[in-house]
Length: 275
Image 1 (cartoon, helix red, strand yellow):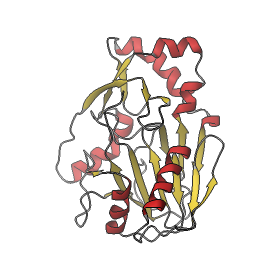
Image 2: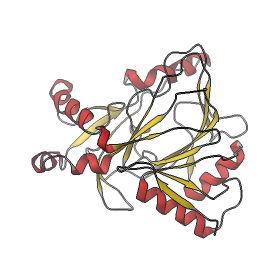
Image 3: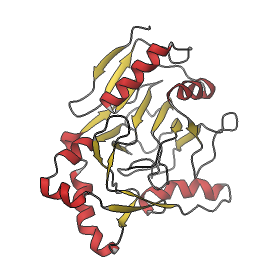
Image 4: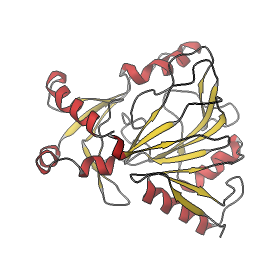
């Protein structure tokens, strides 16, 4: 097995993995170790990789089943690889709010891979938040109140839809409206741990509650679940690949590099229905 070394990024979550070339065909034991690191640390990064869209997708297939992003078109040469781009003149970044990827789908993705193709000279870091801890640090009374509750998720909340809709308008395509219902607290299918699953990017309201009734409790949960002690900060390097577990994390891309271009390649891995 390759000499895989794991260095934690923060106390709450995150680890950097070195000693492996992801562009090569990996041994099964190495892939298993990477999957174990993802379950243990929730978000993992591999600096200094040299990945083409083809080799990125090949590695992603060792971890799960890649699926097409529901709103944007993939690369012509690899439709399952999506370019996440902020251009020099743009002021709003893609997904510039705390969120869990496409939680409005009936079967949200298990995880996401994001590879740094072109980086600004500074800025553009990504924050991640541990939603196991967010759930566990709630009071016992609030955990009991949330048990069994369901929330409604939508693809049309303005904060995350803005740049996506810009890209669709450039192609003359109308954005789809996608909604789904999921438990407010989900149980991770592999670890068995419970995680808080609402997020300000896609959660609209609680099922059976009006939006006005839902908003005060949602606002509290949105603030609670991204407290600094639940987070880590990923500083991108040329050739960095990050992978995060979408079932128990949230993330926030930091938009602090106006005037510079940033290009990332993303692959999304199919997941199951939250329970």
